[in-house]
Structure formats: structure tokens, C-alpha cells
Image 1 (cartoon, chains in turn yellow, purple):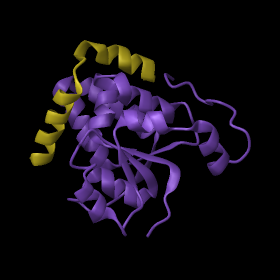
Image 2 (cartoon, chains in turn yellow, cyan):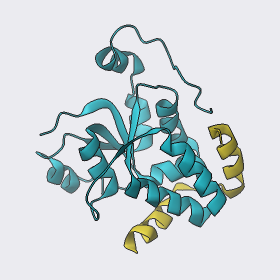
Image 3 (cartoon, chains in turn yellow, green):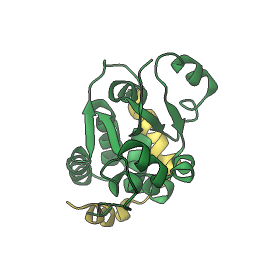
Image 4 (cartoon, chains in turn orange, blue):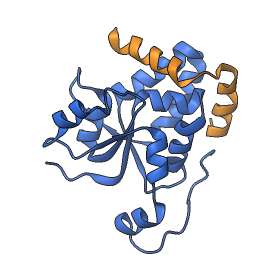
Length: 30
Length: 156
């Protein structure tokens, strides 16, 4: 899949950096 | 101390996932990598695993799998010991001069002191890297000759 298609698909799940940071922190605390 | 390559960059998993799911400065910094074949993204499987997990968690498994396949083609892959901080260990293993992260702790003076003498790496936020990135001078130093401009489509 090209990057442009990935970004189009990802638009449905658009979020913010804080949420990404929290999800990564949970992952690394596992 | 290892001699880092100024054209080698590690993006921590938060930046990789934000490139896909947020955009903004994470996408700007990743576009720098995508549009210059001589700027190399360095990552370990552990680092990509973390980012893929975040994408699957906040989006879905299909998107995470598609992202992993695409990013794997962009990366110089390195290995490090389990339990190491994936971004810093990838930089060490891959001789990268830059680590990009939103993690304040990773950019702290304490971390910098801990790294001093082991790896000569600069930890920056994506916007900090983008504002300092000078393609012309870096190209001249790393590749040689006059900078021809971007040589790849960052959306391909």
C-alpha cells in the first residue's frame, strides 16, 4: 500500500499526540 | 564513542504512530525521510513492534499490518538487546545521529548525561528537527556535490 493510501485509511482514526503517547506508555509498561 | 551518521535518524514509536494517525510535525519529519533516499530511517523490530501495537490499538489490525509492511521497506533494520529503550538502542546499533521523540524523559538532561560517552546522539522533538534540517549542507557533507532536491515521492 502506498503512503497516500495509508494516510487516507488512517484519517478515519485521526487522533492526537497525547493519545498516541499514552498508548505507547501502556504498551511499554506491559 | 561511535561516530554517528548525520543522515541516519531514529523515530521513536510515538513519532512513527503519530505520522500515520496524527499528521502535523510527525508527518513533516517523516516526509523528510521519505523524500530523500540518502536520509536513512533506522529501527529495530522492537521499535516497529511498539509502533505497530499503538496503531492496532488506536486504529485496527489491518491498518497496522499494512503500515508495518510499508515502513519495513523504508528502514535500515538493526538489532539490540531485549529490554533496551528501543529508540536509543536502535540509534546506538545503527550509528544514527538523531532520535526523534515526543518523550520529554528521553530528551532530559539526565538521559543526555547517561548517553554521554556511549553514543553521540541528539534527541529532538519532530518540530525541532524539521526547523534545523538543512538538506543542502547535509547532502554536501554526506553524499557530496550540489543538493538536487528531493529524489522520492513522499506519498508513494
